[in-house]
Image (tube, rainbow, N blue to C red; front, top):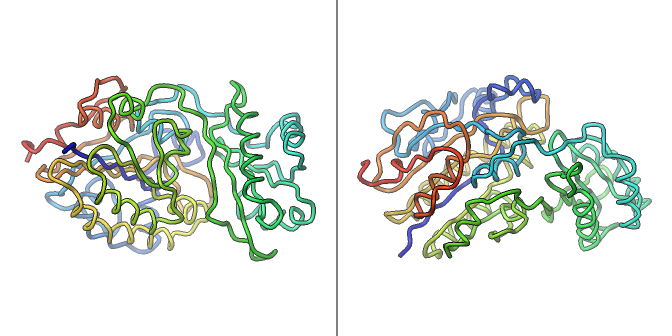
Length: 392
């Protein structure tokens, strides 16, 4: 029976500002540390056993003498701080140039072409919080049928529409049009995101039917290598959207709770190969909305799930836990933050060791390539010793 590797991404759970954080306006960002300090300390006993407190200063989560997992933090070598950048780098693709951003809104001629192709007008066209701009422009949108278009500090073209005014199929159709318009060399925006919402004015709520339209990866990834070798791949969350569905299809979920349930179900029934899962609530529900209390509850839910995840591992399996960027809910910013990310590696029978500071998330791709016996073709340095039983 083929061994399995599980990569669990806690979306937005950063572990301290990177050295170049000031260039991104993120000095002092520390998602885990600041969130714990906000609460006067947090209790994460299961993650603590794995070594979470050994890799970073988290009030309430002190180091343990002998962590069950190998522990460390990873830098992000690619420029940027968005989900696509982080996930691509985990799969061995380091960007040379950042995806373009549009802090002053998108070019007028682009929006004119978009509006012409969609047959609908546009509202907004600014960098804004999604909940704020929806609350502000939602009434006009309902009255006119115009689409709410906005961006953020990341390379995203987001389209918000009320499901009573614009059907999901229509919203998705307009996103496909935007994706086609935003794929050229000068307008290669990382993601087009459908942001449907519902409810009456003054009480708008996002629905769970968000959909991301990403650029196809600009080079070879571990997912491509796995496909070439016939190694099965599955997963949970928005992963497949981030890779434009190239060599991966994942089960989309509405919450971290559902994501954990799907992951456990996949671990129970998946005979061998790679499981790639993303828990996005830390980012969308709590980080972007500056909700540290919700963030802490979410960490507690993951902590409570760790024993079940570990119990579902077979002897030769590998579990990796990391993040794609930061999203500090305690800072004034509602955007992603340029941070280190945590790195935990657990395999039954292996002794935990200090992985130190990794220079790139691509070290994960190198490690997984070695785990599956694939050619070493990705930048970085793996940590295969953390996956070998003789290390115990």
